[in-house]
Amino acid sequence: MDQRSLTPEEERVILHRGTEPPFSGKYWNHNEHGTYVCRRCGAPLYRSGDKFDAHCGWPSFDDSIAGAVSRKPDPDGVRTEITCSKCGAHLGHVFEGERFTGKNTRHCVNSISLDFEPEGRSVERAILAGGCFWGVEFLLRQLPGVLDTKVGYIGGVEENPTYEMVCSKTTDYAEAVEIAFDPARLSYEDLLKRFFEIHDPTQRDRQGPDTGRQYRSAVFYLTGDQKRSAGEIIGILAGKGLEVATEVVPATKFWPAEDYHQRYYERTGRMPYCHTRVKRF
Image (cartoon, rainbow, N blue to C red; front, side, top):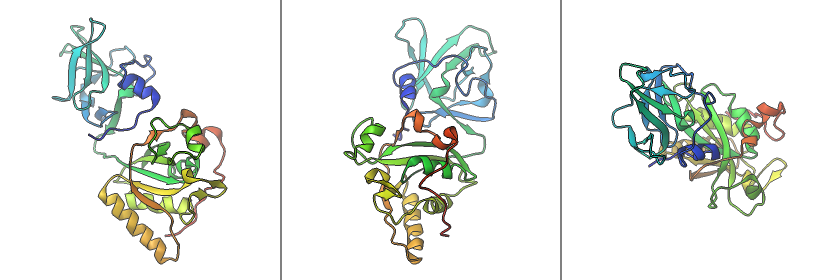
């Protein structure tokens, strides 16, 4: 089963049956047309047409997609817990008899347990490493078609890596960026081309002043098509005379970095110190 990486706060709610504060989640007052899917495994759970405002501060639905949501008694002995039928992720609780809608049912769900797929739009993922993840994220986020990004660590074996662990150079983790993109607006090939233009793919285990395995250039492919695309584009660069050091390896678990690393340059107003675009295609 393909399970997505979770932040510590997502783990608190999704794996350990926590609850986010009311009126704090991004979907409680969200009205776009589409499908709400499980944050952990991506399984479709709820349709936007079944969402209603219960004035409770959490997303509320009076029905779920058939077979998508399971019910079981909550450990408190009073409520009924709802979970993703595919992966068991905690969603929230279900209540009946409140008469909010004609179905007389309310699935009260944590926003953090959900992702949203707008109607008519598919989402693909890529994981790329090219030196300090601050700069790679900042420059890739500028591409039309990029929907979301997250910086983190990939390629090592230790559980729950931290920035201090990775910087100690005793792990084999790379600083990387997980990119969610709309393939109708941005192809994986065009994303890779921009990636190879915003860092120096000829540098091995370094990028500018940053040295060490954590700063290596790498494409962590998620599918066979991604692997083939990376090989083809590296071939183009080689044909231009570049001795490409970029590793093309299968993706392992991606661990999101600490919150203070996410969108670092956007938050601080600073600019990348070792990444700039050099046109290569």
